[in-house]
Length: 157
Image (tube, rainbow, N blue to C red; front, side, top):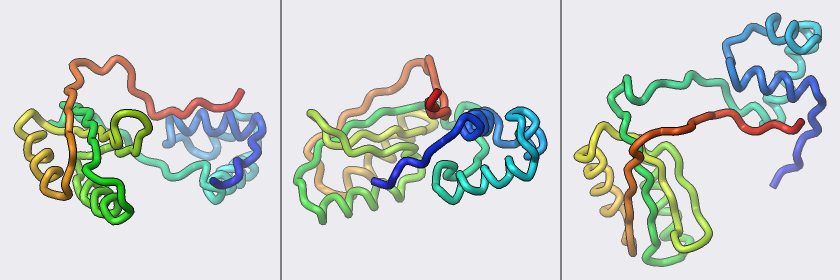
């Protein structure tokens, strides 16, 4: 684990603004956090080089793009070896429908968040998944309604 960078109040406010709208100009950001544009730009570059800002992206609407069905999938591994994990992780990474992929503690070994058009599209992903490596159990839950979704990381106060 890498050392956590020290963030001052300007850094925190800058990160908060960028999380809300990464299209803001350096001049707008600087004005809002009460810094010169040059100082603001240098902070942004430092935060990028430290890996605090990983990248700036556009967030798309899954529903409008025809992949509005969210499926949470839990997986129990058939074995627990480094080779199996490497093969499974590579297979999951090849599936563009998998939005998030976690190794878990507790009763399940892995959890995936998948975006698809419908149940048939999920079944196609499921078939690819079970062909990739031997699995002990795969369980799926379809989200009925999204009640909260954010990409904003809670920032220190």
